[in-house]
Amino acid sequence: MMIMNPTMLWLALMVVLIVIEILTVGLTTIWFAAGALAATIVSCLGGGWIVQIVVFLIISFGMLVFTRPFAMKYINATRVKTNYEGVTGKVIRITQTVNNFEGTGCATVNGQEWTVRSVDDEKIIEAGKLAKVINISGVKLMVEEYKEDEQC
Image (cartoon, rainbow, N blue to C red; front, top):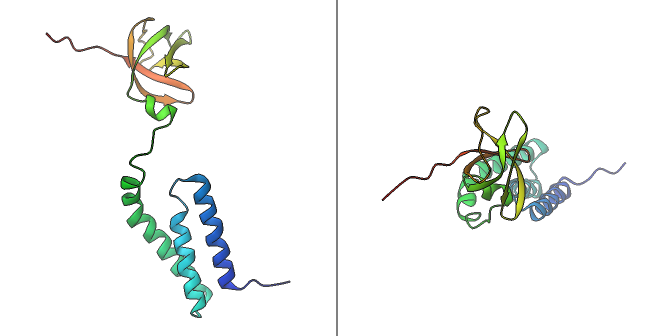
């Protein structure tokens, strides 16, 4: 049985983590790839397994805690919201009466038809009325009736 060199193990882990990051583009594994790089350096300098693992954990979680908020704010700031993220908070027109007890309700949003339910089970929203999307539960839009402010 061949035992892998610790330096090669850390390099392999770093490559795997970078590939996962490239495939997901979610800023999740890059911090651990940085930890694997630090552990590789410690391994090259002759540090033992315990030191390598401790350095990996400290660098990974340190990068995650201290740089991820910055990265999310500035790097992902121009990220376009996906279908469902862009719908939350939007005012929509109901195409089929929303009645939670009867299980009815539809609306077309951005060219896609959605099942719609009221956040208040007692509230019936008639077809043609406006509603505001409060959140999304599974594949259903959860809405409340939208009242336009009457201004002169």
